[in-house]
Length: 155
Image (cartoon, rainbow, N blue to C red; front, side):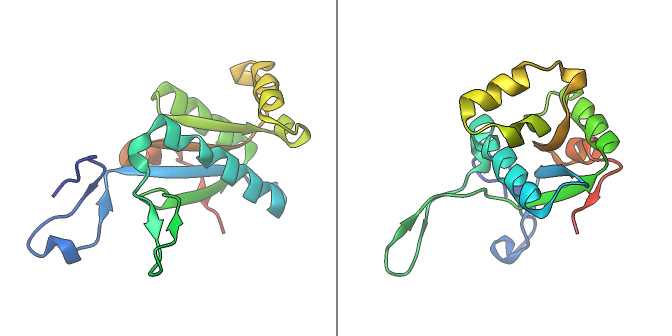
């Protein structure tokens, strides 16, 4: 069965109990030389853009048993990977060549304090000279796997 948004599928009888397999993948790739706080910061910022570019990745709002409402989150897992600066640069090029929705975080963004300055810092540098420390990407599973070739799951 396919959902109306077409991003997850279940096969066979008893599909409601079958594991969900997603046709797409959300992945974050972090440079492996970042400090712990930087990894968390980059991950949070990088994935924040994906829901606007691909609204189908956002699920329904949550509520607890008392009826307290909570914000919706991604409908599928976010996989976090690590790699060298070279792996990140190569993955970035692959994502762009496949026209996949991609968010970037450059080293310059650690020194800014607001969205306007963040965007200005990225705009000031050409694509091939971005000092990438992280990126998030969403797309078909196989395409994202090809983008991430050479990266490893984050420990």
